Image (tube, rainbow, N blue to C red; front, side):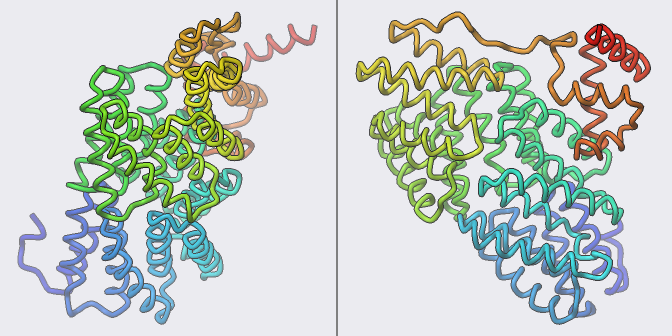
Length: 498
């Protein structure tokens, strides 16, 4: 192997640093960090090169949950890079600082740092500071702040800038976080299209860093839609992605969370609790507190079901602590939901639903409504319970969350009340009624003669996502060409006009 051969020290350092970058992109973060540190230790490197290597090492340490080590490396690298006018290293260091603050629950501070980083990148000569994708971090922080419109704009702008600069390696990550945004805001079909496009692109470029999240989100969607086979397959893929990282990853919740919920669905609540509790404890030891409100309610549920009230109360208290420094609806809602579950208090669970309603995460709102409705029903307050359960069921219908719909309907029936005549209005799998709203628009734009890049510009999505939508359209309509599709759309439009 090349690294084992005797070489000039200058060449050795450069090769190790380059190899370290490649390993990071492939998700092999432990190995990448090791090579970066070996290369960066060379006395032959200039101060600017040492700072750049240290910035990447800080990013790797953050990825492995070493927030303290990552922050020290990022701060030192940023100081040297600022003096040297190294815009790319400045972007790496500041983005790492922002993600550390985000992980610690300091979202407003994180946003300030990443906004400054984006501005500096904008002002750098030729936009060179954007050769590191600061808008990925900015978009993710805005997602966590429950500001979806700004997050979407940041991620799409970052993707456009990367394409203009010819920097392809972060494009899959941009699509993953766009998909995460669509998942959170309830646009699950669009999320699936973005995820499928990101996975294909990651295979093409070899950049797999964000694929733990991609497969984890796909697994959660499949689970909520009651496709347990697909949920297991994608959860396994997330676990395989995670295995490259070693013993710890800041993304590990995206592998553990769906896996735990699948275990619960398979009638293994003890294993589910152990899986989620292990992830919680690892986050606790590393200070990654922003995961608490994400997985806290499910951990509380599982702990209460197992009779572990101590774990449930400790979890609720930790989520409440995170929420105390935040005014973000989904975080405050998570704290109230955890507390309401622990205390079996319908009014607190109602308050959680009310807070979620001020945010942009319909699944979280529906789950809180279901919890509150069930609690009121247990108290014999059937009318209030019915209202909340109906609201939850309506949201599950819109999401296509068949598993959640069935569970909430069973709770309603258990109170002696009937669901009514509407039933779950799931979209058909084939034919024109099976197309999602975005797929209908793509089909119409194909008929207008637009290319995939032109459709992408019109819809503010990537041409790869357009291609994924189009592939879904062809499958659902049993077609194989744009000509067939355009002809059929034209015939349908003529019939409707007549």
